[in-house]
Each structure stands twice: as structure tokens, then as C-alpha cells.
Length: 280
Ligand code: SIN
Image 1: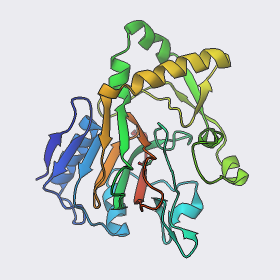
Image 2: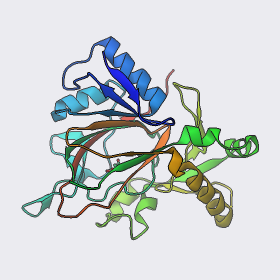
Image 3: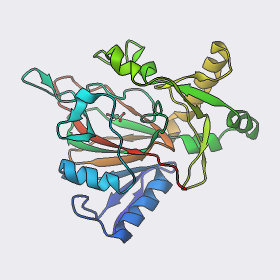
Image 4: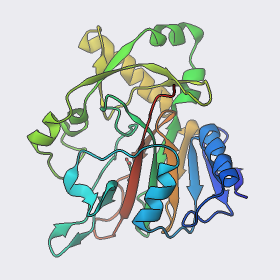
């Protein structure tokens, strides 16, 4: 059976004694599922997954989403989004610099993501970590007065928001791709369906503004929430090893890639994104 070892008091656990390439018994899957809901980030070391095995494991949590960056999907496996700085014969092998800002995956979709499963195929010798912070813990650390204000608010999210700023990505995004994802609205606080915990649901990547507020008011409130959520003592920083599989709960956290590694140092990741299908 999987062994679960928490890595910080706030979020994250390592899972030992499991080979994700093999079919999981229902009992093993239930233990992993329960740990996922409780810890929000799970780290599995020394995994060697084919694309089929990666997809099969991810699908046990729900249907998979296809990323809007069609050119960065793995050929033959549209469920796998490639994050990579590798270029072969002039052809890039995935999205370079992806997700190097705090965000939750795909909050610009009408139905955002439940979670993501990332497999490290090549990692830089130094750098290229991923940081995570708990939006459930952050909500719980606010005063009851602030919690009440936030619970009545709605935010506008848009895919293009992350790419309107010059320093977020080294390659451009076609207008046609941006047009495929118009703005959507989500509550600023959502209840996690498995834990019942209230989670902040805004992020610097895709949240454009708080609905009904002036730009100045919205910027002030969002700026406060972003600083609050990402306080260093609540952040888990994962240093990748080749073969790591890390899965995270997009309903309960934000994450950010760290773009500190040398461009000549290959970093090649495969990621699946699980859809959040409402129950009932
Ligand atoms: C992501 O945003 O999904 C990945 C971040 C990273 O590459 O570390």
C-alpha cells in the first residue's frame, strides 16, 4: 500500500511504495485520492510512465482536458501538454517558460480544472523548481470580516491575461488562440467538494479583476490576496528529479514555475489536466 509522508505543515506529501505504471488496486487508489484531497500536492519519485500510463492514472480522477495551445500537445496524445525548452532540428518540443507566474491551471475555462499530473522527463541540473501555496489555508488565515466580504464576490478570468504582460513568456500567442477563450466568471471563494474547506479562487495569471469594483479597488484587493496567499512560510517548493510525478489540486492551491535555469539546460515535462466535473 502507498505510504504517505507530509512534507510541510500546510501542504504537500510524498507518496512511497507505489509504481504508477502498473494498474492500481482500488484500495491503493483510494489511499492516494484521500491523500490528494488532504495534502493538495503529491510527489511520487522514480516513476517511468509511458504516455498511455500517464493518461490512465490521471483519468482515474476524472475526464482529461485538452490545452488550448494545440501546437504544444504530444502528437497522438492530445491529453498531454508538453512544457519544454527542448528544440530538436529547429522544432520546439513544448511550451517554454510555461506557468512561470502564480496561477491555478485553466481558471479561464467555464469549468476549470480539478488537478494536474506532471511527469518530469528531463530536468535541469540546477533550478527549474515549482512552487505551491494553499488557497484553503490562506482563506482560513483571514479575519472573519474579510472572509465574509470575499464570499460575496465574483472575479473575471481570461486566458489572455497571462500573456498581455511582456515578461511572462518568451514566445508570442496567436490572437486566434486568445480569441478561443473569452472571459469567464467564477466566485472568489469556492468550497472544495471533498474537504468542505473554503478556498480563494483568484490568481495573478488569469484573474483580470473583481466584478463590480473599479480597477483601483480590484487591484488593491487582489494585490493583498496575492501577497497573503504566497507568504514564504506557507509555500512548498518542489525540486524536481528526473522521473518525478507531481500531482496538484487546482481547487485548493496556486503554483508557479521558477524560471531561473539555464536556457541550455533541458527541462522537459508532460502534464495532464483533469477536469472538475460537478457531482450530482
Ligand atoms: C505549470 O504551470 O503547470 C507548470 C509549472 C512548471 O513548469 O513548473
